[in-house]
Length: 179
Length: 179
Image (cartoon, rainbow over all chains, first blue to last red; front, top):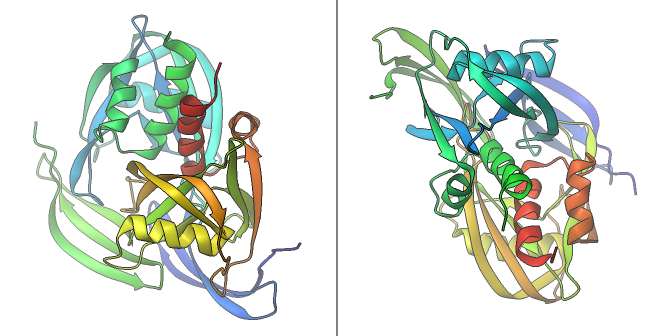
């Protein structure tokens, strides 16, 4: 079955620093028309940085859309055409002050494919050593080291509520914690 | 440390069927100003429906933002003030034709907290029986039953690339698959 929705018209709504918004008029598979509201995003990276004691390096950060501080894995927005691994390495050092000797690609996924094209690329960083933290001018962060098992439990206690962090923590828990 | 970003001004950009967009001018913790582009969404539910043979009920659906068909767990947008569990039960039957005898709440999370307030509520549905599929008028879906172990492998092969599905599949794999 062919589910393709052909674009009949596309209207640009907004062009900001982080997102663009457009509304597409589409032809549905049955020939009728509908509209799709679409948020465009250049993509992002996130890093599971694990130290020698199986602590996960995380950051506390105020998230304006939720009006609260969230505990998340380090992450950042891709510049146009930026190589995701280089972006991940840059963001980890900028946000937490850590460099890593060993980098592994984990997976890429879409955060909200129903209305947004944001793709996230997840990496695992090990062999941590100290670099120089220098957050962006509008970023205020606090770095914390959380044992992987504790981070895993915090998901189901409702203390870690950020999608990329939940995906990554479940993965490193299965990989690194003996049961 | 207080990370709160006080709202100095807020400008409505767009109000659609699924999302609203606004730009807030904020005062940063150091007193300087910045802007935050924010997508408002009424929230959504997603369902891990597992049958007696440990198959996960999934749907193939065209996602306009990505211009491709994705394999995802059944999900749907909350109506304003709708009770998430009732929405999950409705969406499972509408999208897949399945009813379930046993419903368990798993967790809630934010899909993209950097720029969007969408919160997703995940449920596990078991004891499946046949109801009546009746997708929304602009939804074209194909239901497939995927063994949980196979779904788990598909995450790391890049065949399942939807955030809510990756979160939920990792959870039911740890819960239900013997290793």
